[in-house]
Length: 238
Image (cartoon, rainbow, N blue to C red; front, side, top):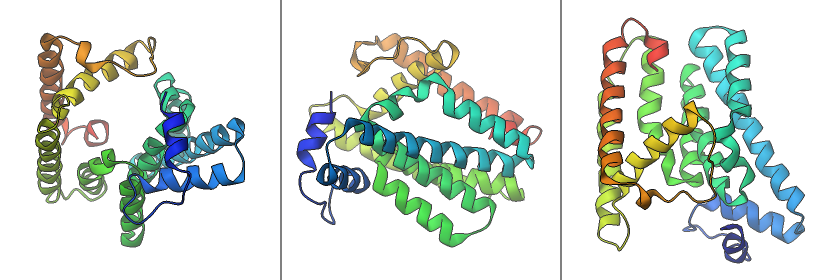
């Protein structure tokens, strides 16, 4: 899979302009201290446990219930869809991104601007998908304070960056990125309901245009449901 390529790419320490620097830094450090697969997997598992702890803390803060936090963290840690990010060493950037994004949301519940900035930096150094922090932090603030004035700007920034990335990728001989994300929604929904069929590298291009449209419609329907239920079931909508 991709582990061999990452191993070859991290033979030297990362520079300031490295691609996904936290991934490169940890692989370079582990490669220089030994080549034990168990050590690499233990590191990934440790990151996953950290993400689970942050998820539990966030849930506990949002609903003011430690029990809800423990239950949420437990479900998050053992749910089958987490397998890929934990088991594949090359998926480590997802874990760093999650630590940064969820950590930023937790910092928001404590109104810690230093923690918020640190979370955003960690997420950005993990993987570009951490851009979702632009939407999740304002939503977290809305749940905790009832003030939603930042949500709109965050969503606009997120959509703008997503479409910009799609345009840039469209200029290359690759599939249009936003369409790929729509198929990812379809896959995520199916694996959440029936967590079977996990594959090493999902072939998004194999899906028909019908599924593109269905997945896009599902996104719009979900957004509408959240908007309708936000005032009545704010935490559930979050």
